[in-house]
Amino acid sequence: MNDTAASPSDETLLRRYERRGDAAAMETLVRRHAAALGAFLAGWGDGAAETKICGNAFYHKKNRCIAHGTMLYDTNTRLMEGALHPEVSKLKEKGVKSVRSRVGVLKDYLPFGVEELRRQLPLLLCNRTIVLTDDDVQQIEHLEQRYYDPEFLLGSTERNDAIRRGRIEGCGLVELHFRLHGSLVKEVELTGDFFVLDDAQQAFNSCFSGQPFTHESLVQAIRNHHPEQSIRGLTEEGLIKILDN
Image (cartoon, rainbow, N blue to C red; front, side, top):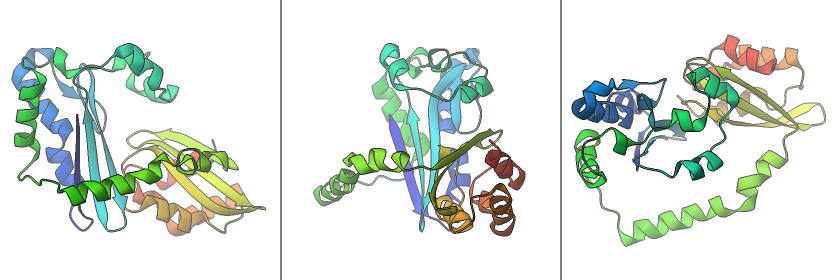
């Protein structure tokens, strides 16, 4: 089950989402119907009742903010283990040995079925309903075609000249994929497991593009431009530490 919210970037969507997002909604449901299980929030962005049952992401693009959440009602654990390959550092951070031991399903915690869950969630998450028109659906289907392009799926990872990554407590996994032109940084692709507060991709490209690919130059660029401010929980010190990895 998925939910997505979008708003103009001048609204504090991240703050509102933290208050009313699906992690909070799931905690409300699980506490209300299975308080004896000791439901709690596990880490930033994840709702859990002993195990992880939902995950959230937040993204800023141009003049829009998008919050997205996924809730797991039921799954085939064998197929799930084959599809998910998280970083070992993330599993260690959460204090678990495997994907299977970390992930739970809502059907094990709620005393009602999926149809009742679907009925209750809009009451917790939404204040209005928007019905997509046929034209809306066609536009969405047109936009999604680019995500099937092999260049989108594989191209960027095939061209990386250097990668720097690190997991920062309170932030998440941050990966910097550098493309070089000679000894200069041509561009940087930012990936990872974190919340953005601004257009992080643009902030990091503006910071590093054209800089000599040396530790000293990259550190000075960080201190001059502060791209870390576009990612929630990332500090200047933390970003410099990532460059050392």
